[in-house]
Length: 206
Image 1 (cartoon, rainbow, N blue to C red):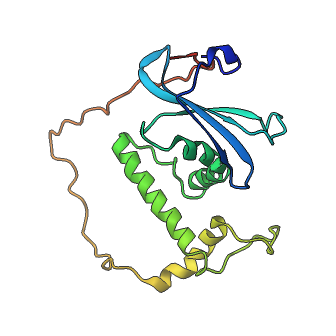
Image 2 (cartoon, helix red, strand yellow):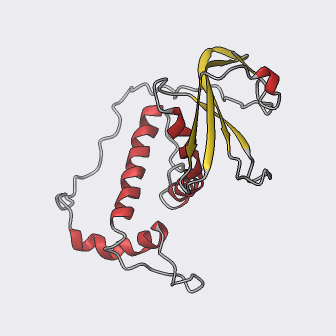
Image 3 (cartoon, rainbow, N blue to C red):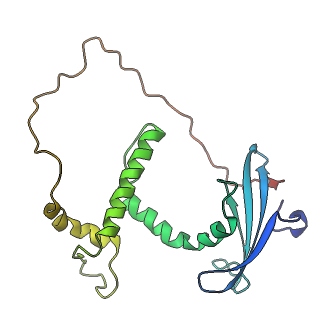
């Protein structure tokens, strides 16, 4: 299947005509159980979204292609329409990385990174919930007439957190750690091969 060659598409498994968030018509079609030549055991759903109102420029294409890998019974039409929110989501990911240090820790296992991701998500949610409780702190060059962002809330959280208190007990000295036992054999951490992404996209075959 070649997205640029309509003769290779075949009949889609389903297609719907819907409306986007601004009430403009959108045509959505998808093909299920598609595979990649390099990984035929991996099933995916290929989605085509046609927006007749688009200008068909590089940043506003009339026809877009997406791949869904997840629940096969999911609402594909809603997934395709939800891609329009990617711009705002990308800003959220960037904020998590830059301000909340999402990618800074050097963790060894996927389970550790999953727990750290949950901690970052909790901190992000607290900033959203505290938007109306914190007095935003602005930099001299920032426009104070626009609605403040989570970054402004994060700067002002230092004034709110002391007022909330903490359920933790006061710190108590515990002395020095005894360290490792004599004769302890510390093994090296497991190493994993680096996964390189191929620059050329693979061809899709039904």
